[in-house]
Image (tube, rainbow, N blue to C red; front, side):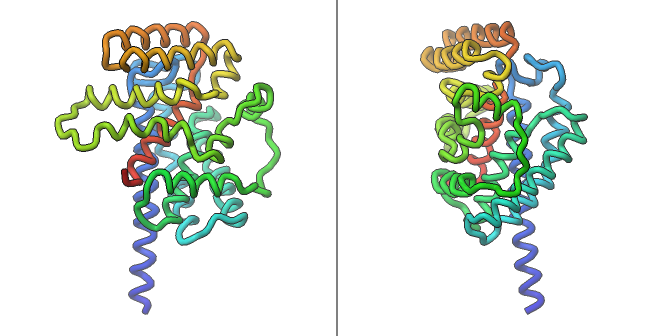
Length: 287
């Protein structure tokens, strides 16, 4: 019996470790994707003055223990207030640890929320499920109030209140609709054994455009208001309407979008978090 219990513990810990590693990999893949309009990438800091790629990479790696603890918490659990409070506390502790690594820079707070919910939901299912099933479970957990959460009015919450948009919390509670819009672009690569780095880059940038095309990104709203958000939404839609990043006209539309966002000094941080969530969801669910 003791041997069986150890095997069970080892299996659960291996599951949690695997999910945490995939979550970090998704954050790193998002950070390194190049080019991205207004965002940190391999070329530089975009519209940011306090972040660079090395900082984003350190931040992502610092969150592996947080995702591990969230996955452990979700094993064989149902969505209830006790689990919601538990992962909320884990997430807040993870944010503190991340902030220590980044010197107080908010690099991945939104990603802790979205990827943390997905890691927990995956562990709750105890096996491979469809993306739609997993986001439904994550949404049911997100809709439960975290009664232990302190009242803190962040920039994102202020933007949600001022502009009447759902923000990261609403996105999760609705079942991550923008993540689900990005997923088909990533899954176009399935079965394409000849897909090289250029093909992957195009698919990933088009997935980002699909999110940016109609996301009410609170990071953009906070820094540039409604005019900047409209510029982002219209510009991203134009890239896709012109055939995507892989086409000549789509690339020209992308270049215009990037120029406009740098001039407006805005960065679609909410869209970046959701792209990382799409990478993670793709890696832990079946088609």
